[in-house]
Structure formats: structure tokens, C-alpha cells
Image (cartoon, rainbow, N blue to C red; front, top):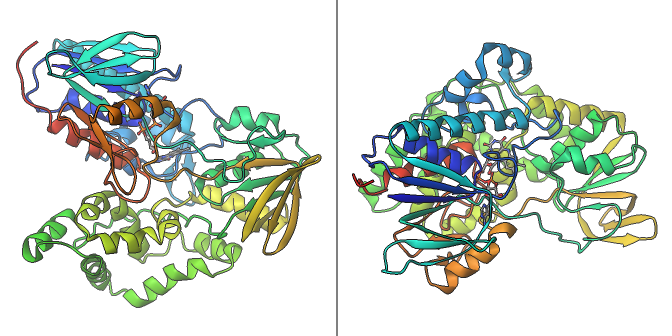
Length: 480
Ligand SMILES: Cc1cc2nc3c(=O)[nH]c(=O)nc-3n(C[C@H](O)[C@H](O)[C@H](O)COP(=O)(O)OP(=O)(O)OC[C@H]3O[C@@H](n4cnc5c(N)ncnc54)[C@H](O)[C@@H]3O)c2cc1C
């Protein structure tokens, strides 16, 4: 079998690792990976960058080997773990570039293992711009930007998520940073005394603020956003395993009722909370308060609650990534729509910030260097900088950094020509709520672009699970 993998980020590593360790019964064949970036296996998040740009999660959920929660931790080893310990979380949090080395080592080990089993492997440093059915009707032929054709029996799209959008039309204005990564490059162009407005208040905005501070930025920093909601703060892992919010319980509900509703899922969470004597109503009231509570007050309270033994937030946050993708597909559309309306709150909960960053943010807020402005309606380039207009008045800045995350299931810019070609040849279709759905059995999509997936962006456990599922679905063959 000839397998082509388009893109060499975390999702591709998950696919290769699953192929290497899997018992899928797939006989040796050929694997070709296409990736134009010089930073193989790292994708958008894990390339070389500042040491202040950290992974957003503890080791147990950064393992690219599906269900092997210790895989990344054992690569890291005790010495590196100790050197990167986040004291508040009690877990190591490494720079994202170091995590990229884990991905690279895992991919290279998988390729070596596959070669030992007789596979031919190669990496082509080019972008795929088109795909068409192969002559003879079996498989697809991929075309690179360089004009070469590559036939494949199976094609796995691992092209990542969307690119940041320029909501205020500031592209090209001097002092505007449209895409902040790598911060080592973009922040290098920000004068230390400049007043900086960061658009957004999610994890990317946190990365920008923390990295500005780590570089000794002296100017004012303002988080400019519509809602003014910061991510929640990670709590220390307790090793608690939910017994009700599980895939098995959701499967059982589906068998009993023929489907699953949001109320059913809330019932499972209520049952898990009841196991530890926690009040469900109090828990949901605390979550809803994120919309109205003053953000710095909330940040301070959350930082103080890193050790809080209550399991509610931990269960919801973990299962959003583990049970969520499965349950999402079973929900009736009105329930999905209800969840989509709470995208910002759900994202802030499912992808919290690490305590070390929360503490840095709080210090900056308390010193007055960092402020937050919500209700911004317009930002425009004016002479010598930018003017943000909002409910609370006007704000001037010399530099604007765009930290708005792309919507889930958006098409990454580098994959636009390929997606256009797949749609034109009816090899795939756009899902009504975003993303791509294969219409040809030779085509698979792993990662954020997969249509019909959950409304929150994918994480490492999500892409690892999807990669393993894709490999598990490949036909067993014994041809070379
Ligand atoms: C800044 C950032 C930080 C994150 N941090 C975390 C974290 O700490 N923990 C966590 O669990 N999740 C995190 N995530 C979530 C993230 O989605 C996953 O961690 C993971 O990187 C997704 O991997 P991927 O392979 O799907 O996409 P990517 O990593 O984006 O890789 C896609 C690759 O496809 C290539 N490509 C695109 N188009 C083509 C084409 N036409 N031809 C060939 N190649 C192509 C790109 O060059 C790229 O290398 C983060 C996401 C971002 C954006």
C-alpha cells in the first residue's frame, strides 16, 4: 500500500506512530510525507521559538501515542522534567520547541521501525496543491507545488488548522503583527518602550504578554477583546478518573435511548460530582460567572484555586477532549448549536492557561503595566500607530499584535489550493458547520480540518486519537 501523508505536524506524527506500533495487519508498503516547512514534525506550534513559549498542558495529556499517557513523560526523563517543573502545577511544562523535539524523535523512530519492517519511507519538501483520481480509478494522484505527481492508494490530510484572521483589516499597516508566531521573530521587531495592544484574550494572547514581559518590555500592554474573558487556570492533576463521563457510559446511553442529548451529558457530570459530594448547581454557577466577573479578580481567585480538591472543572476539562469528540457526533443539532453559542467559555475551560503564565499575568496586572479592555468595536491605523474604539473609550497603541485564534475547522491558507481541488473533483465536501468530509474512501482527514468534529480546536490527545483511528481503519493488506 502507498500511503501519502500531507503535512508533517503533530497529527502526522500520531499517524506514523500508530502505523509503527499498531497491530493493524497492514503489510509493508510505501509512505511519503509532504511538508514544505524546514521544521519537520513540529507544525505550527512546536517550531523554534522563545523559551517563554510553553506547552499548555501537563505531560500525561501531551503524549502523541494514543492512550499511552506516559509516552511523552518517559521521553522527557526525570532530569529535564525537574529542570522545567512548574511549582504551582507540580508538573513539568517545557518550551514548545523542546516538545517539538519529542515529536521529531517520535516520528523518526516510527519511520525507522517501519523501514525495519520493510516499508519504504521518504519525506518530500514540497506543498501539495492538488489531488485527482488516479488513472485506472484506484487511489489518488497528488500534485506538488513544484509540479511533480505522486500516486497513492491512501491519502491522509494532516494540514492543521486555520490561519489567524485580520478582523480589523490592519494587514500591511506599520506596527501590525498579523500572525504572532514565532514570537522570537515577531516580538524582536517590537520596540521595548512601545505601547502594545494585543487583540484577543485567549492562550495566544497569554503567550504574547508573557513573552513580552520575559523580554523586558517596558511599555504598556493592553489586552483588547470583545468579551474580555481570559482562559481558566490549570489545576493540579489529582489522578481522579471520572466514572460517569466516559465513552462507555455515552455508548450505553446511545444504546438505551437511540441518541444522546446535552441534558444526558450534564446528568453524567452531575453523577460524577455527586460521587465526591460536590454541588452541581454551584459548579455551573461558578462557570457562568466567567462571563460577568471582573477578569483580574477571577484570575486571582483561579490562581488561588490551583490546589482546590474539587474535581468538577478537572473532569469537564479532561472529558471535553476525550469524551467530547465522540459525544459531539451523537448530539442533536439544536444541542450542538447551544454549545456553539458558548464557544468562548468552552474554549477557556477546555484549554486553560498554565499556572506559571497565570502568575506572570497577575503580576503584570497588579503592577499596572497590563490592562484589559473589553467591548472593542473597531481598531484603525492612524498616524504613528493605532486607535482602538470601544465601549470604555479610545485607546492608542504603537504596535498591535493579532492574537485572535482562527475558528475551528477552518481551512489553513497553505492547504487552500488543495482543498479547492478536492472539492472540484468531488473527492471531499465541506461540512455545513466547517471542515472537510472525505467523499472518497482513499481520503482521510486528521486534525482540525476534519469536518463534523467538535466545536473546540483539537489538542494533542485529540489528534493522537484521530490518527490511531485512521490507521485502525486502513485495510489490512500483505502486498508490498
Ligand atoms: C500556537 C498553538 C499552540 C498550541 N499548543 C498546544 C498545547 O500546548 N497542547 C495541546 O494539546 N495542543 C496545543 N495546540 C493545539 C494544536 O492543534 C495541536 O497541538 C497540534 O499542533 C495540531 O497538529 P496538526 O498536525 O494537526 O497541525 P499543525 O501542527 O499545524 O501541522 C500542519 C502541517 O501541515 C503543513 N501543511 C499545510 N498545508 C500543506 C500542504 N498543502 N502540503 C503539505 N503540507 C502542508 C504545515 O506546514 C504544517 O507543518 C496548539 C495550537 C497552536 C496553534
